[in-house]
Amino acid sequence: MMESNLFSAFSLNNKIFRNRIILSPMCQYKANNGFIDEWHLQHYSRFAFSGLGGAFIEATAVSPEGRIGYGCTGIWNDDHIEGLKKITKIFREYNCRSGIQLAHAGRKASFLRPWDGAKPIETNDGNESKWQTIGPSAIAVNADTPTPLEMSLDDINRVKEDFKNAAIRSIKAGFDMIEIHGAHGYLLHSFFSPLSNKRTDNYGGSLENRMRFGLEVVKSIKSILPDDIPLFFRISSVDGAENGTKFEENISYARELKKAGVDIIDCSSGGIGGSPVLTKSKIIPGFQVPYSERIKKEANINTMAVGAIIEPDQAEDIITNGRADLIAIGRELLADTQWVYKAATKFGLSNSKDFLPDSYSFFLSRRDDYLDRSAKPA
Image (cartoon, rainbow, N blue to C red; front, side, top):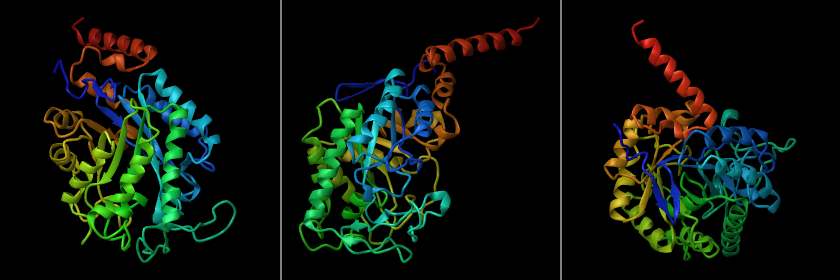
């Protein structure tokens, strides 16, 4: 293959992405009071010069109580900006568009790190003290988690301001794009799902009302967002639970999100009852791609496919057949930061080494020359 749709440029709000491959947000739980440290700089540097078209850093809390746990990065304070600038600078140096995912964990906050059990924090020892969670209704995630406080209208307005202020800080930090986390059972998703939202006011009941909070957060951010900064919105395309949201409701949601100013829908799924994975579904490569395909076509909006996209040929097929506009890859890039270069080489692209820093490109060219010569008869 001498050409590749996966490696074609993509324009969004006058921002040019050199290819369609995006680093998916992946929580690291390594921050201290929301601040990034040397770990994050080293972690994201690996991806900055890996040839990606763009990269999202992990879910970043818009308020202290909006963290999943103590290790989450934060952007609720102006003091957080300086550290985040270091990350955007690294991405900019290597022509990789940088993005931030703004999040509020809602009733799924105050949890231990996954490798510590991913259970609610129960003690008040040292720095790992639990805090009160909030949600659309006083309904716990499951029998093993605490019941959140039902949010008042003042709480709703405060969180909307938190998202807007976080977006302002994101712009100051130099991010090229912003994603709102509206999936995986976190706050915005919990308002959308009838399983977690039993409100009787304008924020609960009908589909229109359950969409309201998410749409208002979008409009709040759009009110301060420059035209050239694309706005992404991650959804859980289905709850994957009995009596949860229907996929058709998410198509309607995507249409309204587009009207409110969202540029691209990041199509994930699950998480309303715990793990952000469809526990009742068989996980196969590209298992969420049908969601991005249908939302793209039926809501007439750009989409990003995510979830078990492993092989370059698989990603190429998704873009070529119009099933998504961008490909989000997470764990595969953790396993192999040279995924992009290897894909370009596999496809026979003449500029495959252009995705790497000069020093890498030079020495890999020498390596290829050695291999070519060693393969020839003496």
